[in-house]
Image (cartoon, rainbow, N blue to C red):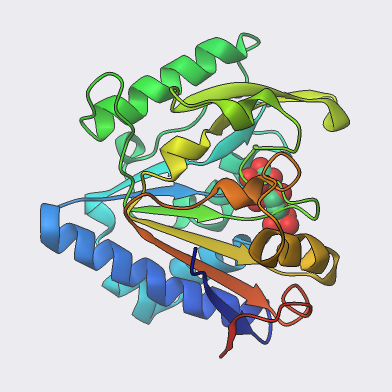
Length: 252
Ligand code: 6PG
């Protein structure tokens, strides 16, 4: 697969470039079909993008907030107020600061002890929100993704059963190395998106990123390799430290 990899100087440059892509994705989706659906990623890297979208007046004014449907790529097994919650991070950095109504934001219920129930409910929320028939995958307009230093993305971790899911849109997954369950979009669900954008920074990710983009296809080791949109755009925005070992990529 031909990867579109852009190597930028730092997180600030990545956030600015990602914000341009976000605005482009939002405005074209709304002009095409009157709505824009996005799955936000967790972790720390996207915070810079979320803050920019919330606080930069020029960017904020270009986004059709009232037409947006906000989902999440994954969630930890915690409630919305927990420090580890992806929902909490996105709420503090973005959602609480922009004109989104509560019924435009769809949270994964990480507080449920029954994580299968949380996964099934979320699958239904995606199906209803995006008007998807049973057995079809949702076509999100944009999915934001990060990557761990061992190649996981969303909560698709190396060596887990979730990597082999071909039917479900959302699954619970046991992550042994973290001794916890997570709830995550599956690779086929993510790959049905119109646009997927990775935001990756940090030297600790350089080897895994080289493996993902330039190494043999071994997704059980490097789950981020599974992310290949079936009919969509895939953009990798990486900083010079994470991309330091790459022989591909365009420096911007
Ligand atoms: C999560 C994310 C996860 C994240 C990577 C990278 O729930 O943690 O979905 O896939 O994107 O772990 O995290 P950083 O951006 O913090 O490096």
